[in-house]
Image (cartoon, rainbow, N blue to C red; front, side, top):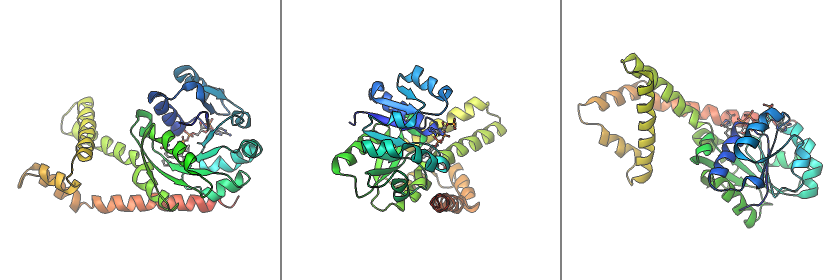
Length: 274
Ligand SMILES: NC(=O)C1=CN([C@@H]2O[C@H](COP(=O)(O)OP(=O)(O)OC[C@H]3O[C@@H](n4cnc5c(N)ncnc54)[C@H](OP(=O)(O)O)[C@@H]3O)[C@@H](O)[C@H]2O)C=CC1
Ligand SMILES: O=C(O)[C@@H]1CCC=N1
């Protein structure tokens, strides 16, 4: 595993990955996270025991891997501030920013750098992340393994060899926890409407999603077959599924995922002007 990993940005995504890394046995002393605001850092320092810093450039000076985990809109400014220190150290760069192309990031950091783009998701926090990874041509086998090991510490890793596919990964897994959380909200609300206490409806909906995912992952059957196994002819599930199909759930989901990846491409164009 990589030795020293510095996270630039200590928000939702960095916090999720760091939490997962610690749970999987990664040494807290080898992890540093930065933020301009020490108030963001003190919980990570106190709860997880990692190193923290408010000076980005100083924090990368001994890093083997630098994870860029700030919002895409401020990435240019952050890279400008890091350029000199990164060029002096030449660590492996891992960016988790949605949309931002590897070539743009590499240019902002002064060029000629091994860079992995990663599209993770927040369930990394509980070791159940799902991430797509893409490596630029300067990443060697050892660095590829370093990136894999880092992200595998918090969940599933799938490499893609075409960078454009990361936008599809964003639609399928990066943004997708939110689709399921929306389902939980809606199912809880509907359960309450049918008379269940909120907590009961919430727990049942979540356990069912967990069970369905676990079962589908353990099974040789396709999701379509598993779905059919729940649908007794003339029964309750058939009625519910008919309703969802007629209401266009499948198409709505496809359109939402198209909008998601289109937004990633749009962000890349907007940000590449710098
Ligand atoms: N959230 C998610 O589910 C996913 C996010 N991503 C990507 O992860 C990246 C981060 O997103 P997310 O974690 O949600 O965003 P957050 O806003 O939660 O985290 C970003 C953090 O960066 C801090 N920050 C701002 N300026 C600097 C700076 N100059 N130096 C260091 N840190 C700084 C922010 O501090 P402050 O708040 O004080 O400004 C904030 O804590 C984005 O690029 C996003 O595309 C990818 C996959 C999933
Ligand atoms: O919403 C976003 O832009 C980020 C990227 C994927 C998930 N959250």
